[in-house]
Image (cartoon, rainbow, N blue to C red):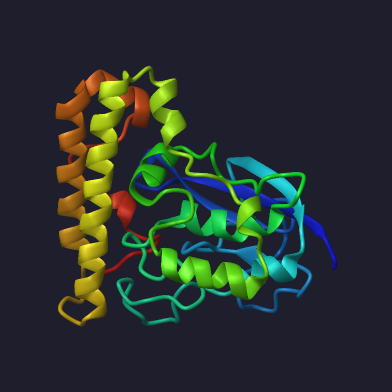
Length: 259
């Protein structure tokens, strides 16, 4: 088994500096790795995580040793989520278990899946936990996304050990924000409902009943966020989630989204 360092990076989303896009490489960013699919050397690996190519970053989130072949068995490196010309609501076959962006998870979850290769008997797999907006993404999608059936299959096929993966990383955000037991219970109930809404909408998509699911998805997300504000108050909401907009859900759109 060959091991090398994997690095997780962040950049603010273009429309909201309070939220970060995340991705993974096996080299230090900034670098001269070149553009994706443009003669990138095999030793250079960039997992775009449903995003675009980033030559620079605003910060490193984590690093750990891993077998890159395992990471690429989860999601192939240097391959975009969708081929040129595809609609962003179409399914990806190259982004781990985050097949539908915004329904199964977002870039944070893809990055965590790639970083699952860093788990070992002595160290739990690293994640992008320090990314801005991580409380939001883990509230809606847990650590590794909602597409649990596909994720379980990937774990098996890639030879990962589920015991080495990170746990659900949302609950500590509630504790750190000082939510009471009653408030945590309310948030957990709302979270369960949110997961159900996303899973139901995904079912409509996979049955061919809807194509562009983003308008419905955005409406669901705003509804859930406002319900959270009502349940625990705006001050506690911001303590958990930061300066997240409760008026739109652009963060649920993949980078470069066009309708």
